[in-house]
Image (cartoon, rainbow, N blue to C red; front, side, top):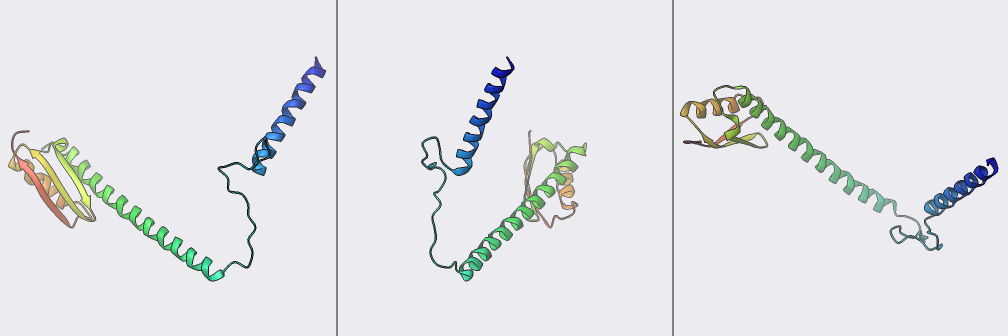
Length: 144
């Protein structure tokens, strides 16, 4: 019984080694390269340092722009969340009826609310929020 276990274990180990080798080598069982992996090609001549620097600068610039956009989007989401949280905690405002959108530091309030008092309170909460420079009023007073 021990001999059978040892033989089975040896076969499994060899099989795993062959699969791992063929995967790391980039070839399948047939010895042909995988289609999803590009074949390694030799380059002739020296690599241009200037070209590499230019491409690196382009990539760095794109990364910086993307990071700035992410920071801006996160700041907008934070402002929207602050205002919605204030409205949810206020007993005089039906926060579900008010849509809050933020673009840079400008906040737009829209929706239909029940009274002029609720309208004024919603605008005041938005204007008093730190980071808000302008509030656009698209709220309508009427039946909910």
